[in-house]
Image (spheres, rainbow, N blue to C red):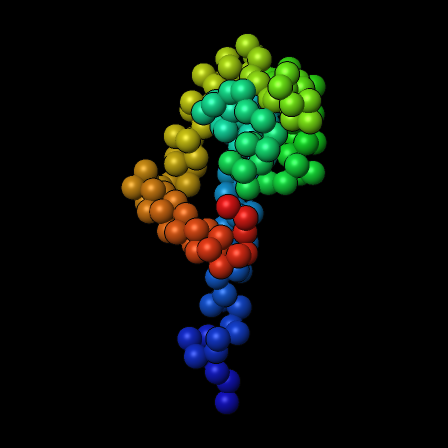
Amino acid sequence: MSTSAVEDPLALERQVCFALAIANRAILSVYRPILAPLGLTHPQYLVMLALWGESPQSVKELGEALQLDSATISPLLKRLEAAGLVTRTRNADDERQLDIELTAEGIALREQALGVPGQVVERLDSDWEELGELHHVLTKINQKAIKAGALQA
């Protein structure tokens, strides 16, 4: 006698991790062609979003905002610098600290990026309310994971 997915706690279809993994791949595949004309990958786009919110920032501050370690964020910053979108300079007060600042080109790219969210909504055949609800739920889950010690704040 087989157990239905509803009764089986190990049924693949019931796993939150499976649904999130599929959603992650699907969403990134939606963003990829939208970001390509901007010359950005999705991780680079996230860095640029953080910098469009506040620039300059230290690598440490960016890492905290994006919940990434310096080993992960450093290659992204090097590529963004090579593309002429950011500068990386040693902090005058603490040479161990690297400050990241938008260039004029990086600032100008924000204007082009303003259309990205709307294009995502359109490609998903969704609406702002539905995606807002999803964002709210995922943010709550992330906060609970941080509280449980799974992620660093």
